[in-house]
Image (tube, rainbow, N blue to C red; front, side, top):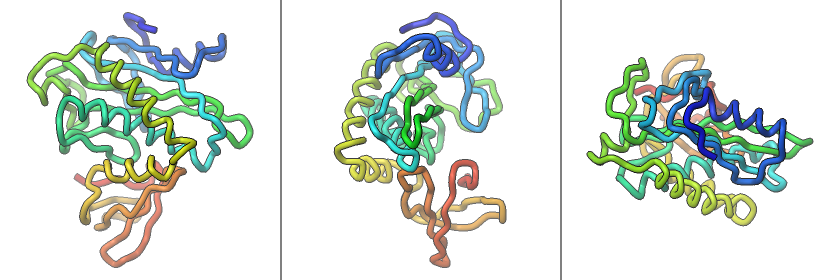
Length: 238
């Protein structure tokens, strides 16, 4: 469902769900979002008419709370696969920012509702920089597909590719979650070697060991100490 202008696709889709039954895979998208939300409460900058901003409804089957991060993996891998069809050097910065080399090209905001111990609905909000060439916010490293490839792209074509790729990775949720995790790990930003991280106690060198199905990032320090972190508990230092 296309809307010409909206405050936030995630907020709007959440409101729609409270008023009506929507089918699995329902997608609300726009090219002009006035109050786009990102992770950590940040604002997602997007020049009107230039990018792709959407929220997609996923109704998982018997996915428990301790497996909920698999949904983030599905969406992140689908965005990566979509961009891989147009350029190289795309990776996933844990938990679900999408990078081209050391620059951010897409952001993902996952919002789940629960029924007992199972995920009831998942709203996957995606902001994908397509044709914007000038960024004005204080975000440190944005980039768009046009800046990478040097050409304009049709947003609706990118959306169709993205929907196909989400369907592709969703089949692994029930049939092969371990394959989903393996693909996610292989796609991670700075997955090779030791890099500098920062937590509440300061900075340290570590490498990625694995990401658990609940989203916990396991790091292995140069002293062979294993450290586990959830979202917002650690960040990679540029």
